[in-house]
Length: 234
Image 1 (spheres, helix red, strand yellow):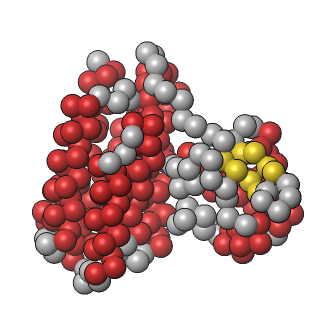
Image 2 (tube, rainbow, N blue to C red):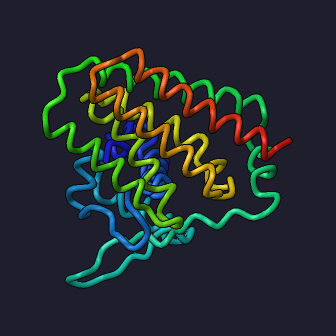
C-alpha cells in the first residue's frame, strides 16, 4: 500500500484520483477486491472524506470502481487490464513518445537497481526474508491473468523491504510509467521462463547479502525487458 501515501493539499482531488488509479493499475488492490475502508483510506491519504468520496465517484464513473452500499459494501475494483492485441504496444509507445519511453526505462533501471543494492546490503530479518521468498513463490505459481500484478508486487516488495518510503514510492512511480507498455507485451512462455530464472538470481543475491550481484541481476532483468520491448517494436 506504499502508493497510497499522503497527497498535497493544493491538488487534493487530482492527486487522490492519481494515487487510487495507480493502486488499481499496478494491481496493489486486485480486481474483485475493495479499497481500504473510507475512514482508514482518508487518514492514509491525509485528505477529507468528502475529497475521497469525490475521487472514488470519479473512478466509478470512469469504470474502475464499483461502489456498493450496505453492510458488506465498499469501493470494489472492477478494472481488469485488457489482453494485449496486435498494435497495442505500438499505440502505447506512440502515445508515450519514444524519448519519454527511453527516459522511463532509464529511470526504472536506476531506482530498482538501487533498491536491490540497498536491500542486499541491509540486515535482513527472517520476516523480511520470508516476504521476499513468498513474493517470488507467488509469482512463479501465477496464472497468466495474474502474472503482471504479481510481477509488480515482487518488484515493489524489494523497495518496500528496504524500509525507505521515498524509495518505495519512487519505484512504484517508475513502474507506473511503463505499466501500460508491459501490459501490451504478449505473454510468451519462453519469456516467462527466462524471467523466472532472472527473478531467482535477484532473490539469491539479496538473500546472500551481495549488493553488487543484486544490482547486476536487476540490471540484467530490466535490460532484458527493454530489449523485449524493442523486439516487438522492430
